[in-house]
Length: 253
Image (cartoon, rainbow, N blue to C red; front, side):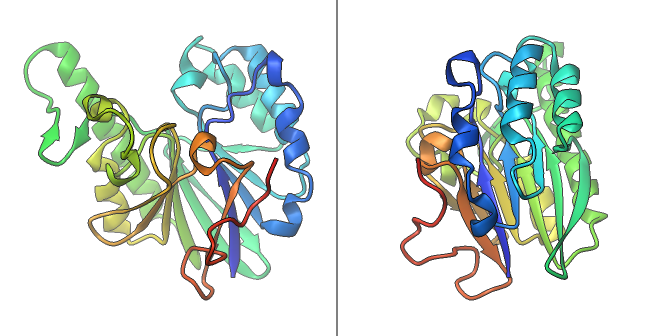
């Protein structure tokens, strides 16, 4: 069994420096890896990137992350990525990695993703150049994620994004902003690759659990949703992806 800890939207800034790291004490007893589903910073500055790197440095398990929209806000995504990598965090954008977990291979492919909406209520690359660029960016990031997932050779495979691949986990968010919270194109490439689990963040007012049209479990691990430092999902063991029937497993504040 592979124990996957996941969280998104930790939004580290000067006002909370050091607080999240304190909540990670003992994570190695709960999980084999930590996935961070974007929005690691508040305003996407290079200084905040260095702060979050220290939060995630040497926590006792490998850390894999994707960036979120907040991490792009100040045009310092390159500096944030470097700070995280210097701290030993693997940052993915249309890429994949494989981690050994007690003799089993966990493959993770990650991308920020983007908006566009969901089947029946989505944008298209038609009309103004701005609309075409919006949807074509989603298509491009979904395609890169699909390629990364397809190339994975592992016992269990997980897709890590910031934006949602399904609308199930957006329940509670205003329907008017669904197109800015995710895209069905992400779910399409996940289903095509027949992965084991999809993890995302971004939807602070959404719900934790969803499923792709092809039956892949989707988990919204945004911290305001899971209301703990991380949730733990188990792959390859009894209970499918849930590590406990009460769904409360994972570290608490």
